[in-house]
Amino acid sequence: MNSSPVLQLQQVTHQFPNRPAPTVYNLSLDLEPGEILALLGPSGCGKTTLLRLIAGFEQPQQGEVAIAGRIVANADGMVPPEQRSVGMVFQDFALFPHLTVQENIAFGLGKGDSRGQVSEAIALVGLTGYERAYPHELSGGQQQRVALARALAPRPSLVLLDEPLSNLDVQVRLYLRQEVRDILKATGTTAVFVTHDQEEAMAIADQVAVMRHGQIEQQGPPEALYRAPVSRFVAEFVTQANVLPARWNGQIWETEIGSFDLKSSLSDNFPAFSKGETADLMIRPEDIQIQPSASGTVTVGDRQFLGRDYRYTLLTPSGNKLYARIPADRTSSASGAAPLPPGTLVHLTIHPAALKLFPTTEDVVDGAKGRSLPVA
Ligand SMILES: Nc1ncnc2c1ncn2[C@@H]1O[C@H](COP(=O)(O)OP(=O)(O)OP(=O)(O)O)[C@@H](O)[C@H]1O
Image 1 (cartoon, rainbow, N blue to C red):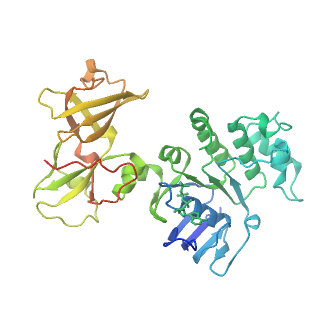
Image 2: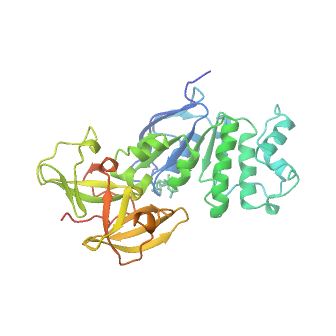
Image 3: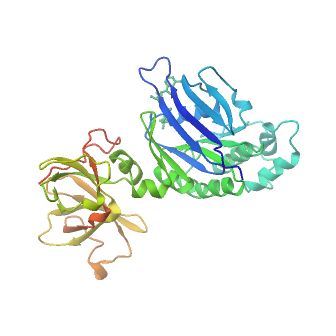
């Protein structure tokens, strides 16, 4: 089996003429055959621009893009999109309204392609029987399946999907997530898709690349990003972790909610610290356990029922917020943990092995600002 990368980017840089800084900067990545890669990151980090560089709608000023072993773009020139063996799926479906399902799918096929490829692609996305329907006669989810069938029908080396589910209702998104993954896997398709939804990225992709300021901050399987985020940014973006300041007292890390021995959770490249220094402590919402306690210093601010679990908003003595996710089946009679009404004083239990420490940074994920907590 040929295991050379289907997609290879080497030190790719792209800057729009009217922008003060590159949108994609010195970015390298490899994608193996049959793998699905999610480009995940906040608005404006360069995800779509990177996808357009791969598709051939933008040309890099530096570096090189190769698809199926062929260089398709560098600073000297580029192969046009239609000659890259790449299928595209867009957020707005981009179907031709005056063409039927089968005509839309046949549109991208060359002369040498068979009619059988159209019916094969229609069957693949579960739309057999809808061949003669027009896009306006289909639901949003069905239209996006037509777009996926159209992208897959020519059997491209690579399929690129730009926020393919973001125009759909939440229910449709949830089942189409699984369907898209199943279809890509069934056909052994190598794919890159853009999303700013971390749950979607984790659900669909084999590899997730978290982008920030035009670079990949971390790339790996979803589990690796979740368990071992390399930075506070990745931790907050991927796990929506709580972050609070911790101070090294020479022996232990002190925080507003307790002290922790963090020897096992310090990353190898963490700089040496001296007494009194502070760092950012990451606590994942699912690693917090709460018990009602009259001597507790943290108060339940709010409680939301999310089906399988409760999401508690906890207020620290200084009034800042921490989020905890507690399984809903852990009833108060069994463990005293849930459901607790707002106003309850609680004691927190957090296993130190689940914690991570990062160098203090001000540059946090949008929307996560203002969550920092003072050290007691
Ligand atoms: N054609 C363009 N000309 C100038 N600047 C552009 C152009 N396209 C994108 N940009 C800028 O490049 C930056 C990255 O845009 P891009 O669309 O790649 O981000 P993104 O991560 O996909 O964001 P979003 O999730 O909001 O779609 C933004 O600051 C954007 O304004």
